[in-house]
Every structure is written in structure tokens, then in C-alpha cells.
Image 1 (cartoon, rainbow, N blue to C red):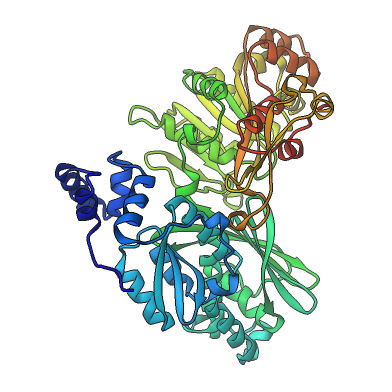
Image 2 (cartoon, rainbow, N blue to C red; image 1 turned 90 degrees about the horizontal axis):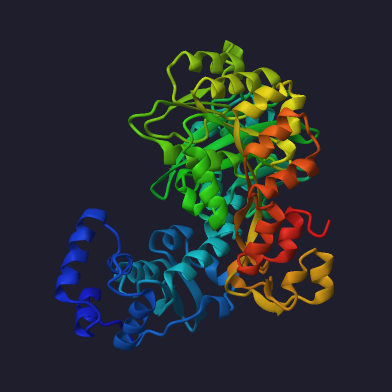
Length: 564
């Protein structure tokens, strides 16, 4: 049955869900933002997404589905080019007798229906799903799928005559825009971005080349490339990053920027020689996902209040700690965005500069030219700064200059690799900072690490038994409801979708200052003092977030020690 071509606004007005005035406001907004009308209406609070879907289901006779309960065959997803899936935010559900059932957030998008019909040669039967569910499903299904376009490219790679490229002496092939290697690399990068990958690993093995994506902190194998295409692939990526294609004996680092789905995406590229060739890792830097407000970083209410109090100080040193890849830079960028003001001179010193921050002077480390962290920091102090951010304190000289900056009226931010907030004090002393200087300059420490979020579509409730509660040193939670991962179509059967941070925020109070001055370096003693001054430990933060259903106790245990 062909869809009756009606306008969404008319349907909503006819059903009394919005007024003519509200529709006019939304349409005026749409002219400026080019946003979907339904999304505007929901964003403005004129109606809820459930109300929107209910009226469309009733008025048009289009059924609504819950994707988490649907069994979507990956082979069915492959029938539709990822370009169409990404463009229209749609997902094939099933195919039966030449008819494709198509999941849509906007079933009135007739252009999408027509394009799918032309692409597949099938009749299209639309069904509806919530935009949130659909977006999550698209990300999950497209991230690890080798679609028909990529399969064709892999076939071309196998058939291509690489010639002298195999000896990595010629780059003519890489410079041809329609060469299969170029198209394969571009498709791979686009797939990684659309699938929410943070890193792309291209690893030469003995007989083939393995490609893996890191999604939500876990590595997933995506596809295998023909071994003979690998030299050309390496050359292509090196050319994109302006690296030396003839040098294979030493590691190289570079970066490139591409426009993908209308967004500027940076890729930080690292090569590493191995026995089977150069391994390549590309870090995906999506500015839209990285530059978030403090409210969106997942701080608990108490921790959010404490960090906002810390960064409002006129001077002092604030250190963000955690393991590699724990989101320290993201936290600092959020802090700087919060503090960014025309009346403040904010200067950063980074290696490398990951994202461009409007209105902030960002300096890139260049060791070959003599621009090191200490040299750069000395120069910044002569630039009349109000706020300074140094990407990482790697040595005692940089730490000493940071202390000097904090003592001379500047607000100074930096990062360290330590396991806890309290452990940072001993680390700073070991770097050569005198205790009396540290106690005078240190304002606070934020420690964090990333864990996975529970998939809200499949998580299962349970009551915590007494034995486990005692074992985890949380007897007060005996009999309380927690949630465990189950696995569904929305989370690749992992039970988790997305990541979040656990935090502890140490504000240096009078007792902590006295302890640092008196050279108390025991991590346990310092932590007890910090708790007495209001710090919530990372384990307590994890338990709170598990109790709220954000993650599982199992995942918290992986991130921090419970019961110890």
C-alpha cells in the first residue's frame, strides 16, 4: 500500500497535538536551522517523541517497532548502501517477497523511501522507531559490517596490479582518485566515524592484514585486507598525514583532517615498524563528541559542585590524573570551555593539540625546534596569561614551573598519570617539588577512569545478596536493586553501549595542606584526610552510578578495587 503523502505539521494540527501558532514557530525555526520538523517540535517541548510516534501510527497506519526486540539480520543491512543509511538515518529490518521493511524515525521522508526503492528495486514498507533507538542501532550495525560496497572494493584490491608499489617505490597509484586503495581507506575511515570508533588498528600479519576498531574501549575485528595491498595502503595513509613514505624503519606520527557526514574529523596517525611491516593506528578525533560541557561529563552532583568550585579560584594548580585514554584531555577542554571569556587570556601548551578551541591561544610542542614543555611554559609566563593549561607534566622542570605559575597568581591546569587523587601528592614530591611549595600552590586534584555504560535496552535487574555486598565492602546495599548486562541487537550482544567516567575530586583543605607540609606521603593517610574534607572516592562514585543503573558492579570492579 502506497503511503498517503501528507505533511507532518498538518497531521499534528489535525489531531490537536500542536496549535497553528506552534507549527508556525517550528517552521520558522526550520528555515534557519534546516533541522527536521519533528525534532524541532520535540526540542521546543511542544510534544514528546512518544506523542509524535503515536499520532503518526494512528493517522498513517504505520506500525511502531522496538528495535531491541527485533532480530535484524546483518545480511539484510548489507542490502542497503551505508551512504543511504547515513544520509536518511534508516535501517533495513527484513526482506520478504521483494518487499523491504524499512525502519524510519520519519516515515514521511518520501525522498528516502524513493531512493531506497531505486537502489534496491524493491517495494518499501516503512515502520517507525524512536530516533534514539534508531541512532543507536545504526551505529551498532554499521560499525562492524562489511557492506556490499566494501566487499566490491576488497575484490578490486585482490585483482589490482600493484606493480612497483609492492616495493613501495612508486606512489602513482595512490595519487589516482579512483584507485581502489584510496576508496577503501576513505570507506574505512567513514565507517569508523559512523560506528563511533575511537581508534582504527591496521595490523599486518603473516598472511593478511587485520583491521580492528576500538569501540567503547573494546577492540572489534572488522575485516581482513589482502596482504599484497598493504604497502599501497600504508603509502596512502602516510601521504594523507604528510609522512615519509620511504621511511619504514622508525616510527612516525602525523595527522590529517577529513569532512565526513558534514563534520570535520581529525585523525592522529601513528606508524610502528613490526616484523611483518608497519602497524598503523589512527586515533579518531571527533570534535562534536569531545567538546562537552562539564554537566555532560558524568560527574555526580557532589563532584560536579566540587570541580566547579575548584576552577572558579583566582589562582592555584588543578591536576587531572588517570591512565592513558581515560578522558583527561576531554575534561580539561571542558573546563577551559567553561572558563573561556573575552576578559581572560587563556594559553595552552599541548603535544599534540587535539582540538581547536575558539578564543584560546593553543601552542603545539615542537621538540625539533626547541619548543619543549619547559621552554614553552617559560614563554607563556611572559605572555600575561590568566589561565594556563599544560597537556602533561612529564618532568620535574615542567612541574616546578607549574607550581611557580600557580604561586604567582595564575590558574594552572595539567595532567599526570597516577592511580588516585591522593597518590598524586607523592608523585609530585618525587618529581622534585618541595612540600611547602606544593601545599601552597595545589588547589585540587581530579582523578578519573573510563568504564562502559549498561545498555538500557537489555540490562536485567537483580537484588544484591548479603555475601556479595560484604565482599565488596558495601553491606548497606544488601537487598538493593542493581543491574547486570544481558546483550541484545542494540549493543552487539555485549550488554554495554557507550562509556562514562568514574571520578574522585580532591579539594585541598586546611588539613590536607598541613599534611603535605608535614611531608605525609602515605596514600592511605592522605586519602583518609581527603575523605574527612568531603572527597567521594572513585569506588563510592562507581557504586553510586551502578545503583542508579548507569553501569554494572562488575564493570566498576574492573575500573576500581572494591572490597579491598
